[in-house]
Image (cartoon, rainbow, N blue to C red; front, side):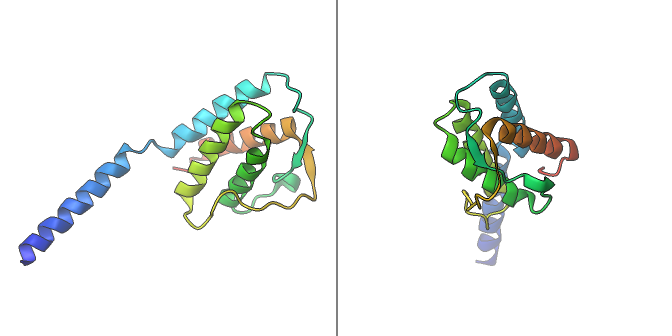
Length: 138
């Protein structure tokens, strides 16, 4: 009986380890968002000047997961502006959920400070690039 329990435990842990390796690394989501953001920023759109909540205002350096969660909220509200925003939004939700299960994205944001959507996207790309450089999301 004890041997059967040990064998079952080993098999379950092996399966969990195997399924975890099937998930793409977090860096893939960051790279994809950087690519999409770069392409998006090269285009001109009617929504570029749209005001959105600036979750990056004042160089906030708090909880990175919370900042990306709030960025997901802003993108969720702006998805209709550009087709790429849906993919970026989806990737952000995946990043937030992987990094911290406590955050239920999208997160509430305060609308005190605003910026243009284009500026917001530039800031978001910089944050993603910082994460890739620091490898803080692996």
